[in-house]
Length: 498
Image (cartoon, rainbow, N blue to C red):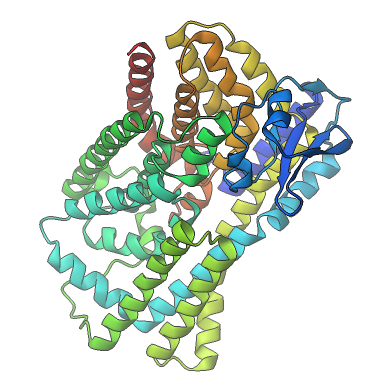
């Protein structure tokens, strides 16, 4: 009898989409009224069911709607998405999603996520040009020789830097660019691709889980909860330090086991396939790092510096980020003296290598399309909010942690989760006698914990790049998730009684 294989990322997402479509036949449809601020007219638009009305943008309007958020948060642009209006949930006629909706959902998802898909494809083209220039081989060879005997420094450095990016400006989707670059470095250091995957993905996840000044989670959630984003900052920073240390120790322990005995690698049977895609540099071979190759590497690194600066300081998003990598690819092609025909062929082939990843991103968005069209997301939120009313403080904080973990399957966007749930969930803190920062923290920690394994998030796209199965990832990461869950529960429980 043939051994059953774990399904591919694409199949997993299609199975999930089918199950969600079935849910729309079982879970009652429902919706909260929403409020949107219009900057051009300085007014609010209140949308309820199939009607909408324009309201004066004033604090009085917000108070009447029981929205405990200062008006300035809207007028300053801190809250730009529609927010849910408390106590307005209404059940609707069922909106079940059938076979036709299921079939079209991946197409709609690909269209909706075109911005990130193009970013991924352009990054693939850039990586192709970099490989053709020879700069990667020379740079990786130099780094491997420099760190010889101290390769663990690479794990500490990468995980810490990416965690800092996650906690400050929400570095997440952008990390997709790092895998093709860093995997050959980790393989040259005699680690496996799982160590590279862990250092990048876990670094990003732990950083966003314990966000400190991240505008896409901490700040927008605090604003939507009606509190200053600095409230609870000390606790989040402490958890960032503790969580990052736990993750680094966990990755290094696994990495050392693999280095000492490659057969202990969780992905040992896939090593030849992975090495064929990401050939480790032979450090015994001379790869001279010439002045031209140094300049190419500098231009390549500056693409990321410019991207990070633009996102964090200039309010850039996917269009601007994609443009940076496109310009970078052209400059590197010129510096490497790659002729026009070869450049185009190499760029297209590089983009094609990441086409599977781009499709996974689109199919994952298709799951959200089914949930939104089936009108079940708000129903989940409504029942989650009623479940926690009047609870014991410690129980409230921890139940909220798991509620947000569950909701993040249906709403994987951190900013989307914040504006949809905070106006409804944050007032519950008042009823149990804790600060609203507890709800903000539970939201961040709950979403962050589930992000390590959330199939509707970024993990399947990341695994597709590295050619690691979802089952292998679960085997590797679940002990870490359990350790972080216990640590977070202890912290939340202690914090509400201090």
